[in-house]
Structures are given as C-alpha cells and as structure tokens.
Image (tube, rainbow over all chains, first blue to last red):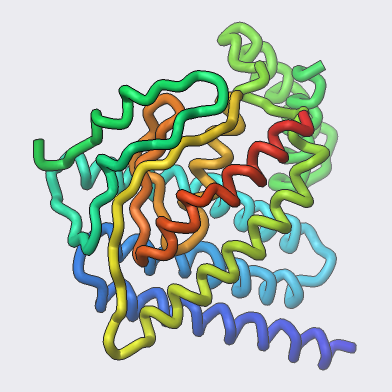
Length: 128
Length: 157
C-alpha cells in the first residue's frame, strides 16, 4: 500500500516537474512580456497542481494535506489576479506587445440587453 | 445568513491552519472570527459580490469543467514551447461578456486568465481586452463557448 502511494505520488511529482520545466523553457524562449506570461501560466496551473497532488498523496490524510489544498486554492484564486495586474501594468507602462494580429478595434457583436456598440472604438491602446 | 457562512468558513480556516487545539487558542480563534465578522459587517463588504455563497453549489462542476479546459490548453501551450519553430501568433482582441453580476464577470475574466494561452488584460464594463498567444485562442474566445458556460454557472444562483 505504502509502495503504491509512493509510486503514484512520484508519478505526479515528476509530471509536475516536467510542466514546470516546460514553463521555464518557454519563459526563456518567448519574445516579450505578454507571451512569457502565457508560458508562466503553465507553471502555476498544471505544474503546481500535479506537484501539490503528489505532495498530498505523500502526506496522506493529515492536517498537512489539508493545508496543501489551501495552497492550491490560493494559486487558483490569486494567480489570475496577479497575472491581470502584471499585464495591465505592462500595458500602462507602454510596453508594445509583439503581435501578429491586433483585433482590439474590431466591431463587437451587440450585447443581449444593453447594446453599447459605441464602446467598440475606444480601445486601450498601450502607446497612446 | 452570509455572516454565519463567513464565520463558519473563517473558523474552519483557523482550525486547519492552527493545528493546536488547546482551549486558549480555540478561544482566541473564536474571538478573532467574531471581530473579523463584525468589522466586515461595518465595512458593508458582506454582499453578493464579496461573498457569492449562491454560486457555491454549482462551483464544483464548474471548477471541474474549467480544470479540464486548463489542462487542454496547458498541453497545447506546452507543445508550442517545445516546438523548435516556436509557432506563436500573438493576438490582442476584444470580447463581450454576457454575465450580469460582478461576481460572474470576475469569474469569466479570471477563468480566461487561468487558462494558459489567454490573459485578460483589461475590463471595461462588459468588454474584456484579451491577449492570446495563438490566433486560434482568440478565435475560440470570440466564438463565446466559455462565456456561455460561465453565464450558465452564474444563472444557477
């Protein structure tokens, strides 16, 4: 039983390490801050989950494993907030994204109840 | 009602993090919970935006769906990173969110950001600015599949 739990948890931990490694490689390969953030988000979603699930199996049914669940929940609630703040800060700082296509000025389909189609032309241009 | 849920959640949080169950520490925990709930009440932050308990029942199935989406797109970004040609096509786009409540919009914006390959960079009313690492990611969001799923989740409240 101990052996099986060990083996399963190691599979999770190694898989988690693989995705963290991939995220890090992506962080180095991507051309600008925005694309790097996409690569980093592999780390704090799939990488962190697999790693922490591995730790939870190692810890068994203890207080430590409950705390690990909290750490995971923390990643999922605060991670996107931090990413959003970072991306917005980069835009306001005037860092031009490397883009192959910019659809920020596209015509939005009218909303179901409050059709505010005039808002379609005020885009958040970073270099204004 | 919301205050009771908040108090219960905070007390559970204290018990899990503390791990010491002596009467003195438990009394301190109960005291802290009461103080925090009173302060939150005074600040008027216990409402459907600050504590959307209505969404709790539908949350597990939504989280499961979201997690499958996250895993799928994490895998596709992994393939991008490991591809020697690095075939990225970064795209900025705008999408309209159909959610009615602030909690629903926040759920949608955060779900987009959590999914690897797409990040919400701006929220203005119900218009989100989204950065996607490949053109297809922007296409998917413009098609609105995730928007519908979040609205369905919000509608269960």
